[in-house]
Length: 130
Image (cartoon, rainbow, N blue to C red; front, side, top):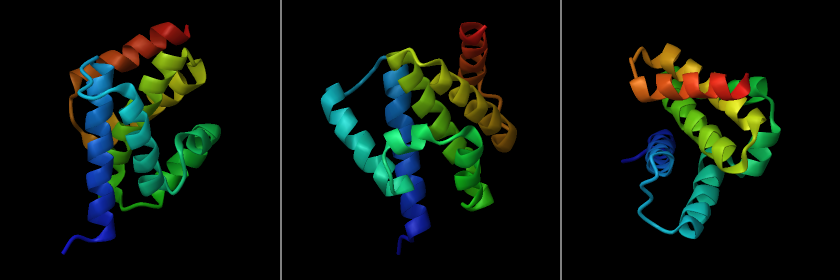
């Protein structure tokens, strides 16, 4: 039997994979369909949409993650990094890029994984924010 936590974690991974495809410019579906999927996934994961999430400070979002099980933090941070990175690039929003950098760095710290694509994105964001 799938628990709510397992279901949410599956949704987080699904959203992370969809964002990775968009970041790498390999979308499988129309962006209109992706937007609908993102909204429903965001509401399933956080109980609110990206507009509400993006209005929160980095500290408030980190607090939301800290309320989840510690073993799941890396998945949340990777998804949040991708989410803010993608939206920051599309909307040319430096606040979103700064949040992406923070969440990517937290992902690298909590996962213990040497993820070169994420490291490269962090370096790209640092240059863009200078």
